[in-house]
Image (cartoon, rainbow, N blue to C red):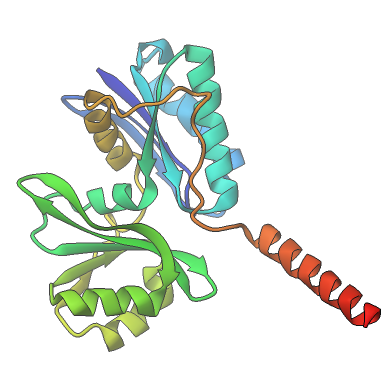
Length: 244
């Protein structure tokens, strides 16, 4: 069994191919390029280097969200296109779950945080029990203080990772009441290898969907949608004042 995995949910673009025995190839880049520039060339490269025919993969795993709206759309469109062309199922992996899976085997609680701007983060709480990833608190969009309060109420030592760490590290260090640490650089961002590993588990559990069914998971509306709603509300209020 082979899984093709894609992740373009954040600043990182990552592509991997994994079998049940090994991570066959992984290509990850986090440097000043858009996913529309990187994702397909990276896929072409690992397919060529691994001497793989894409028709040989059993399924396509994709981080379904949350994350960057543009990145999620690019990843989703790529996965759907491949799924339709190859007639392969899609495995939707929650982005925050896949981040947590980078720290497989730790005995500490795991808190991935992705910067969602406006002092908010995409986050969740996880732990490993008997080698299985357990979701303590499912992925969500909340203020950084809210997740800090939730962690403090549990009294457990925690490891943070994700692109929200550089943004909120000082506040975390000031406000967390219990032992905490930050994942090292080779584990602290999205990796398609983790998506592929979870994809293998999901595939065996038949947690798949068709390419037509697959949709990204945003958790909140985009900035453009928020700004449009604000404009429409302002226009309604102006019209109401003029009628009075």
